[in-house]
Length: 393
View 1 (cartoon, rainbow, N blue to C red):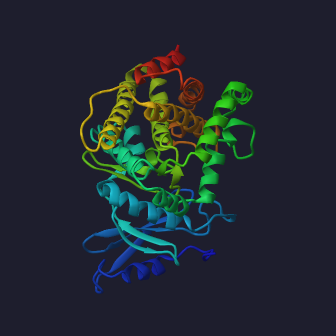
View 2: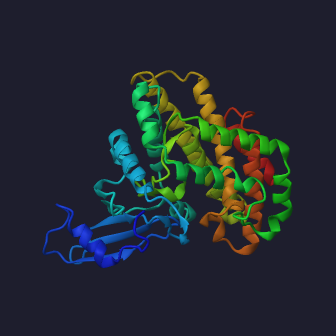
View 3: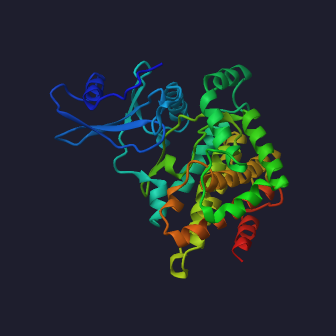
């Protein structure tokens, strides 16, 4: 077990100064904590004169937001470093550069993305970001194809599955995303105005069967190396660049899981916009367009990779992609619901004034259930959008 107290800023600066090639010995360094996540400490260490800096992630052997009362393996940083290594080999332009990893002290030193902002924040502000759907569609296709049994020999896949077993964090995902929100549990929290809707959801037998099927798929279908927590808060963007961060939940899992979490967060933001006053709805449909572009680029890149680099004709999706579609839509529904009923709510909704928040949460809860139970009935995103818009009427 690692030390229970977090590193002091002076200790952090000393550790960074010891990394060869980062900073000259005479440079004066400062450090500040910049992370506000539940699990880890994140710091920026920089030259006080030039401003050049690095990001340092430190993982204590417990949940950061709770403290030692919630023990959690510090091995999650090894997993994140290993995931960044694989991601860097597959598509290095989409992840931060790693400068140093110290497993003993649970430190990961990496590129400072100071000119980037969190995708969720940018979307909440209605910023125009033309490149990220293509970047993410390509990244996901490449990662999920090139780490799967379609391209790797059985021995390599078996080794990677063991390397990314990540038992504790996989269990957290199965519990907090795919189990707790769908029945009474002490970890759930939701607005009192939703009590009747939540109770009805918990007693919906068809929904519970479908969620159980998705949970089983997550727990047993080790198709490819997934990020495991790919929401809009795990992506950093500029107008021309996109980077994926926070890979400590990486594991082998179903290909549609990462896509589903990301789509779910985009649809949740759509629910916020769709319930807004008329003059604030202009950004809602472009969000759905971004989902379609993300999926279109993903399937196009997947088909190119599957055909050995030759661009295929626009043939109907094969059985594998059809399954990815159904998983994507289903997991998107689960992600929406856990952001409304579960422990970890999304700032997209939390920041709203009370009257708008209640309507956005009710809409999101209804849309999430619809995605789960009707995921096999839809063939296109147009079908899906028509279906969820029906919830508004």
